[in-house]
Length: 446
Image (tube, rainbow, N blue to C red):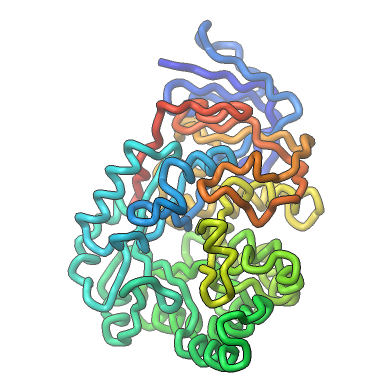
């Protein structure tokens, strides 16, 4: 059995930062204490003096583009970038080609990941207007949840039949994760701007076309339906201050039937950045106003928002450089999400403990992921060692995404991820990867 002793680390876990030693035996955390003296003689010893040891990040929303869109990204390339960014587990979305809307296609993705993924993994099955029977076959212990596009869908994944939507909400015990933007509102807005600009609409109008009103109409409807049916609802990538009134911090997280997520890009960028970044920060939902960004921060810090994620969604440079209507929405983020949030820690915007809560503990709690998301004896050794005083600049030369670019290019981050452990194995060591060991399928205590 392999063993690793991490000495003198500042361990960040459950609201505390404490200097500790930590022993890994095999896949699991075997001991955490002030000083560990009893350990195998052949242990790898890492002196983490001055560094912070975090639970591995759990990213509950990524698009790794496999199968069918592997010119943009694939499970191997993006999970490798994720591991370099301290993400040890991910949940991937169903809008690939073919779309993961049947049990057979879903299991094919799990098989691919078992052979290729550097990180631990799960996938969501996608809902459509006509696959309720497939959704009800989903094993809640082995699949993260059901993803519904209530706007901005690909293929036939827009669920716009209200009767079917209510049936899905009423019929499944699974967590239902939703993308909320009102499609009719967006279509009307887009038609108006195309009249004036054709396809070459200035990207600064993206948050006007995919407006705050479009978000509100859809998210408020989803929340209302969840309350009516008792469904377990999780709302992805919220982007407006107004939507924050839909969520509560009055009850413990474990009692919430409706939970909320914000993405790193909605916390970092606002509409003042479009002139400089252009379509490289074109996401759905759109990056909106500075006031919206502050509303998101406020809700994150007071616990109306429960999770920080990435919505990692890479496209090629050629695709992103097209005119507005032809440039796809989305961008790569998994390698830089934790460094970006650690920068906000350095600025005093959020504490390190709260960051760990939102990126590690809460995803594990909300999805009921077995033995992950915390630094505890008997849990899987998914761990990230961070040097908070080692600045580096994001450049094309150090970007690991298959698409080869990042919206953070030119940004200097203060914190550097030195080591990432997954299931006790040192997968990433100061720029060097274990190319052989693969992650595990996540299991859910449901």
